Amino acid sequence: ELKSASIRTVLELNEHVGSLQTDCVYLKQVVLNLIQNALETMSGCDLGERQLTIRTQLLDNDVRVSIADTGPGLDPAIAKRLLVHFQTTKPGRLGLGLAICRNLIEALGG
Image (tube, rainbow, N blue to C red):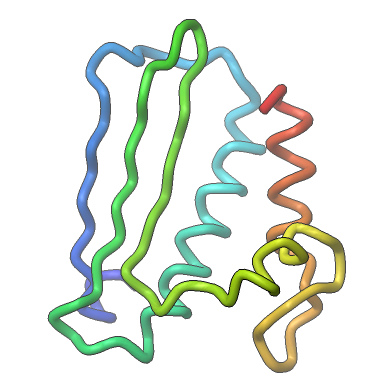
């Protein structure tokens, strides 16, 4: 989907991270949800500006996974509420995706 939407994908994976001792199903669900959100938000951007960056970093004994896109960004007033159930900026959506992601990451200790 990313390729067909002309989204350049950049992987910045830290070679020292190694394997994770975590629930891969939870982590996969979060990553896929965030990528899908990025895909949708960049649909209105110019073709040459679409980029998704996935980065891993080793911080002490923890691993940080970051997903960033070149979409238009969020209004700061809305950003604080997006991780709450039933808050959305997308018409026709329930507003559960990011709230579920937050719950899954907290369940993983993040």
